[in-house]
View 1 (spheres, rainbow, N blue to C red):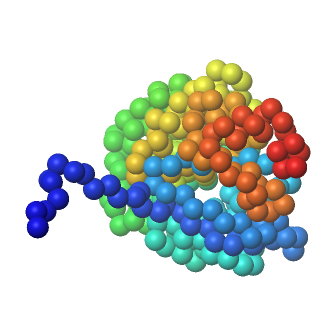
View 2 (cartoon, rainbow, N blue to C red; view 1 turned 30 degrees about the vertical axis):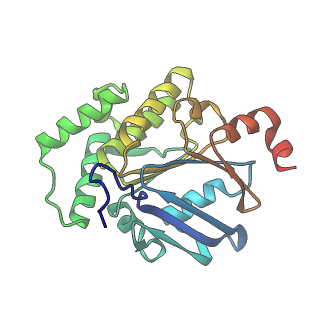
View 3 (cartoon, one colour; view 1 turned 45 degrees about the vertical axis):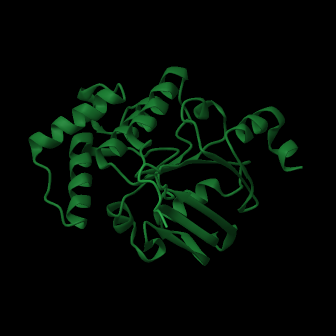
Length: 263
């Protein structure tokens, strides 16, 4: 029997990046996540949308390992590892990045110092050599240019005196420098004007839209998805995902509101 023609390609499914199985979590003993399940493959961008109080930020904080967010059931596997067994710094070194809705200010610590220490701490956690000062500055300037952030701002204390848009762009610069496998971005579009929204959206695409990376994008609005086209959109309500679809689901939410879609 003749074999298969060599010209026929064999396609393999992208590896699974993140698997959340029946996740339950509480905050101050109050149940917030109530059986949430989700699978994200490498190369995919997933958007999570939902009404206030649905558990969107709780999901991000729980995956990031923020203290006070207690997992009471379920499992999370990230890149083949038990994510919930790792400390927050170990999750970061493994390639997880959490972007905050409201980036904090850190007086007395310069952006460039903070970013270099963060990067080299992660490299050390992976058994890699630290990046030299010159190599780091070159990388930082490249990422700042990509996000149209004045390189001189890297000399200032972390987020101190930054506008809302500057804080979000600075956070995207941090993401570009750390180069994570999975970025969980909690309402990156919050507080952005039209120009900053476009810059951040293009930055997310440039940094994270690759076959070996993935993004979980938490947002309220369609507007960011005009720039960061998601492969999947999920509606989170009552602590679990109640509906999933393609990018058109976000448009449906924009037109009908959560109440109309959930009904």
